[in-house]
Length: 109
Image (tube, rainbow, N blue to C red):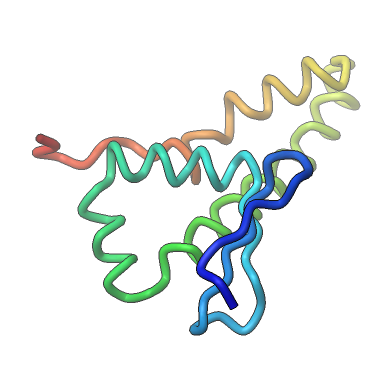
């Protein structure tokens, strides 16, 4: 199987490697995490790549973000009577730095 193939819907990327038993799909969250990590966490990215687990880490970050976003969005809609968009935006503000937009590494050149 090839190293990567772009799907045509919703900017989802299929990453398939010989080491992974199932293909890994990166959504906007996974792609955003990869761009951010490569720029602000290059040492971490190199370490994950050396271990062959970068795509798995990106997938985990996006799935955890999606799951927490969904739960928090529903909670905010019910408890604070926010519109779905308001709840989604507030949930994103609260969760994005936990898994996707990690703080920069020290001594970042």
